[in-house]
Image (cartoon, rainbow, N blue to C red; front, top):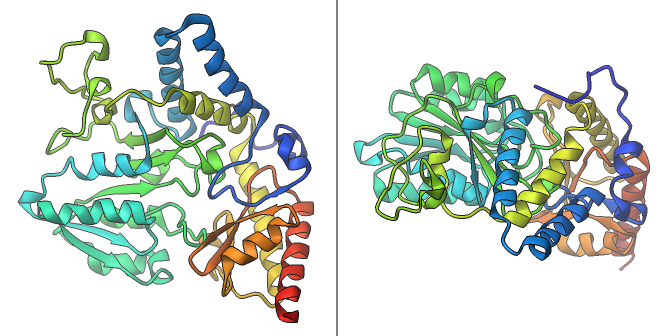
Length: 389
């Protein structure tokens, strides 16, 4: 994977953290939901409003930002710009991908309970068009390729495996699943939204056919822009019905009667990109490009282990894979009322992300050992208060 600095460059969480003023008085452990606010993000939004103030409708400038973002996200995941479509959300990316198959010919989609609900919904909606759905419903089993192998046969046309599960940050063996799928003639879709920005991604090494991520969460931008990687040379059974002027060979031809599709990934695009989110995504990438991804990931792994060990010492039950190779940038703990627990530790300026029965604590490059200690202190205080009541 291409990075700005060689892996021998020392990683400094403090230097990275200095770009995020709100972290001076909070512990941000909610990056799995929204990344912390950076100086660069604030400046990017100012740049958007300045462009409107100065030029009213500077489309040339905005389109330059869109194309720059395409080039940069391609480099970030080791793809080429022609393999990147810019779309509004990962849900739309998944829809554009799965609806390009002609399911009237039959065939199965293999998915799992690791999937974010939105992607799972998009996949299952294709049953109305003739797709069969196969699913691995045991989250723990789904982390290993052995659970996928018996379900991957010549009837499977598409396998969907997330890079990191939203549920508790666990990581399936996506590379091994991809190898099994390709051996059976199936294509592979990877939802990387819960990992991109901290978990290094190389689509060539992963060998997937499609991958999506977006600009908020660990990518340090805002909602409104996502990316669909489409392996070069892949063709579609069907061209996208959800289309628009950015899905044309020349978007600025302004011919409403001409519905032509580029041979590149841009054929999956539709309407006008969300310009403020494009600027915000560029701001996030500026920060992420400034460090070695492998060194940053090692820092996140170390902190997540410290946090998990501390929670275990407090007697907290964790949803955490036994294998270190299956752990991601999150530590998730069970609680009877995770929303209330999240509110309680918020009083200590510790930000978290409750989901279902779990409270998710997610680590980024800007987190430090002091953050881990503050989180453990806040959770211990909240649990003591609950026990006392």
